[in-house]
Length: 250
Image 1 (cartoon, rainbow, N blue to C red):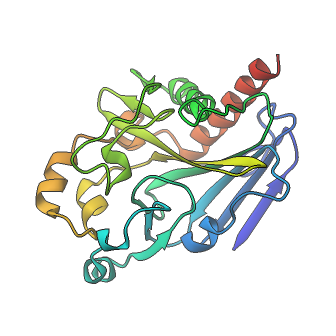
Image 2 (image 1 turned 45 degrees about the horizontal axis):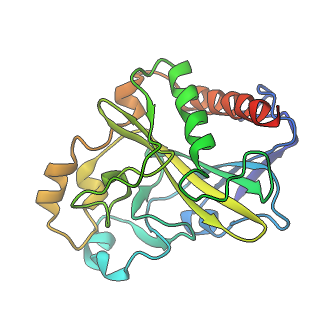
């Protein structure tokens, strides 16, 4: 596992860019299972942790039934099955698939909210501002109750939860959370590319029907902002988190 840690106010796979006073920024490359094992720091502190999975995996939500997985199909697709500690349903991670950001808040932070339905909104708003900054249009942060579909119990991007970001072309950012007495971990991911067939390809569902119905449920940044580099989106997110933090601190 390769780790780069930056102090407050630093960002980017290279240089300081955003005013992130009070935040620690980490960038970590590694296998999905190790990345998901990182969890919350002890004690929890303001942390932005960009995770780059170096191999492909099907990641299940913390309470998702194991029998949602077709083990033979997962093996044939070259997907290791991993379980994360945050909620929600499955996501395929791996090179070129998504931008993965873990955000940690300590309990009592000015951005903290005891209501789990409101708690992730600050992060969703930061993602939305960042996407607008790189040219994505029609961006909306979902602020209501969970919107479920036929497949949302099995596939993360088949439903829409609080704080998640949608566009007229589909959902682009998913967020799940884990809360402890000391803090909260928000795991967020923006799709770089959406492949509905891959998203359901290792699940024990009617894969043809699911892939057909989910084709337009989500969308990747390759379709929303063609040619925009992932590093530029990351910098925009960091700038937006800095702005949200300043507003919250004020």
